[in-house]
Amino acid sequence: MPLCLRVFVSKKMLQAFLLRGLSFGRFVRFNFQKLLSIQISNLTFATNKNTSLDMALQAGIVGLPNVGKSTLFNAVSSSAKAQASNYRFCTIEPNTGLVNVPDPRLNKLEELVKPQRVVPTQIEIVDIAGLVRGASKGEGLGNKFLANIREVDAIIHVIRCFEDDNILRDEGPINPVGDKEIIETELQLKDIESVEKKMQRTEKMLKQGDAKMKAEYEVLKACREHLDKGKNILSLGLSKEDKLAIADIFLLTDKPILYVANVDEASMHTGNKYSDALTEAVKNEGNEVIVMTNAIEAQIAEFDNDDDKQMFMEEYKMVEPALDRLIHSTYKLLNLSTYFTAGVQEVRAWTIQHGWKAPQAASVIHTDFEKGFIKAEVIAYNDFVALGSEAACRENGKLRIEGKEYLVQDGDVMHFRFNV
Ligand SMILES: Nc1nc2c(ncn2[C@@H]2O[C@H](COP(=O)(O)OP(=O)(O)OP(=O)(O)O)[C@@H](O)[C@H]2O)c(=O)[nH]1
Ligand SMILES: [Mg+2]
Image (cartoon, rainbow, N blue to C red):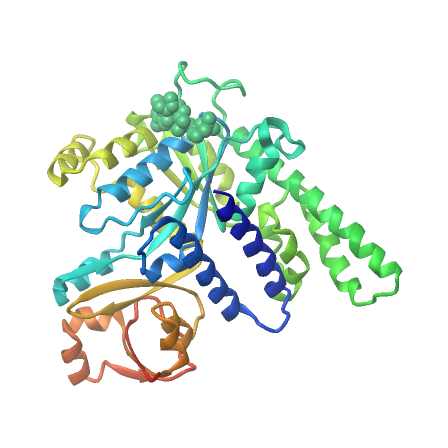
């Protein structure tokens, strides 16, 4: 959809502007994202007033061709559709979907509060077409697909760990570590190109006597050297200030990654020699590897009927779909936190970023909540569950009144007092 595309481009440009610290900071960036999402959701839902949609961050499914990326995407999207009580999946573009984030705490709160409805929070998943060796030089529509990766906030890298002679593979025998390296190298090569371009611009300005550029140039140089060693920018551990130097070039290897080892059915609980090799290879990177069988997940997600789904999972000795774990891990990867509102009408999970203060957190519900913020009533999730109700927490001194400077904690059950 051309309008969507235009909006996305300007999102990135504005983000760059804001990230460069031109006085607004994170808060405005967030509100812009919100505004942007409202525009996007207006294109797709005529009547969507659901603000949790506004905050959805994107994770992109990346990998070589034919490794099971679309199968995974279909599993995610069908699973969202099958959540009949709360149908909240939408296709923004054919390959983009919003999905509910499973959170057992929400179920627990539902049990205690017995609300009319429960609304989970969501993330956005994007199915990106397969990259091939040489993508950074434009091979196999590489530039287009790399641009898709640039838009996402985190990467789900799917790696083929199953044998099947019927499924074409151009890279020879199954080789998960080699596959990981092919994709990683392409992303790094593209980043080298972006860093070099910016270094040239910065160098020119330095020569023209703009001394401010010196620090920026040094950061770019460090990035270049790191990439030359075959490492991802994320592992360089740049400070917030240093990150400003690369904020406008949206480096591909600066995004958090998790791996999906797509194994054969027989290995879904144990993994196999391929997924073991992958796990060993990423051990030192600290990235998670989720072992799952995408084809089975896609089948599970197809069931509308919970009993049938349960029976199918029992057949495979599964307690829960691996997909739930994947979505949960992706949410963590995006560095997001959740707080809850728990009223009789609605128990709901809201997404914020780590380190947000109470008024900012309130703005996710409504901007008026932030503008007119007075106080927040806060109950820690564990206290709520231990005592069973808001009233009991109040009686036992477990309901705190917090002000503007309060840093919202993951799991807080909150109620905002505001004045407009
Ligand atoms: N045996 C087996 N086959 C699978 C599995 N997952 C996917 N496939 C098959 O692999 C083929 C490719 O799957 P896709 O999900 O389309 O792969 P993709 O990574 O999206 O491929 P591109 O979009 O072309 O890059 C299909 O025929 C799938 O049925 C799996 O877990 N086991
Ligand atoms: Mg595909």
